[in-house]
Image (cartoon, rainbow, N blue to C red; front, side):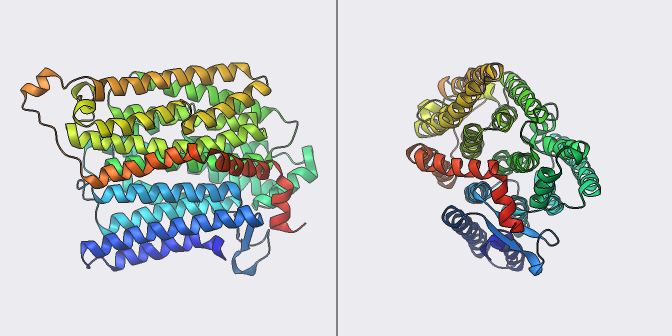
Length: 496
């Protein structure tokens, strides 16, 4: 069935990428981009099928659920498959023109496909153990990718990234073991069925807390976020951009998926916990971002801050809130990736990631300035750009739920996000190059057209999220409906 394709295709292209290692660069790059394009086509096909026919379920080896390996694609997972495949493809195109850090090799291409295979597997996994396995596949590739290079700062960032993700995996697998001991199942549909059938008699608080702890570290939410800004700015820019747009979203997806299935109506503990985490994550991330002058590190802290908005939707746990959270994930993935790509373009032109040492881009490269302005304002949530719709739905859902403190936190963080984007604009685009830099013989460099074309693609997607907002919001609302209607998920998998 087509639902297996997002796993099989990247696996085939891992093999194919390595098998053409002795071929010409043109052949290697053609294989690399072809794999990305085919993966996008498969993801869009799955999304189209799910929207027409409902949840798709497949059983590996013809073993019926809950005994076999279940693969499930609903609207939420299909959205994530499509979103990440597009992001990976654009960053792959960008990486071909980066021409630094020895990225254009068959091993690099294979690692990108390995990362994508792990993400896709996590999105369609129908049981917790296989989700854990796909997380590890994703992490194996990411461990190698984040260590590309030989800088001491990168080694430090790599150690933090690897160690925290290993700790996260420990919590995850420990929670899985306890959960299996309590329930006798790891199939998520079967687990949801047993939780609803047995009610308070089935005490799964401890394993659920361990599993959510694992997801929390992977998602970089408060107070476990410190590893992300210390890690994401250290690898080569295309890798930083890819990680910023995709990896933490896998953790957020898994948290939403797991909690939506085990959530028992009337239980307010987890909802209040998520609301607290959302506000503290938003505020702590944005406050740290305002003090940064290394642009990649500043953007990395903003990843933390904006993860808080996604968790806010989970904490409110209404249809409108989940719709807003999913829409926000879509917009953030595209915009945050593009801001990293633009920081790489600015680096090619000015030779630095330090905002204090850069400048003059608005005067000398006005087109790049326009690309940055659109992406930055979308991140802030200035209407009518994509960030506005997600934030508006989350804020409206917060007001309807009378969670005014968390609504105020979200508004405050939006203001400081605007402050940070204006800071980048003033330092890198509006102000002239500092005199001391000019006296050192500074000359503007050139960014390859392929780098700029990649950024243009993401800006066009950002604009299309505005133009096609009704369709996208309706699709996100369908995903939210399926998350809330757990019985439909259970019936699709277990046929009961």
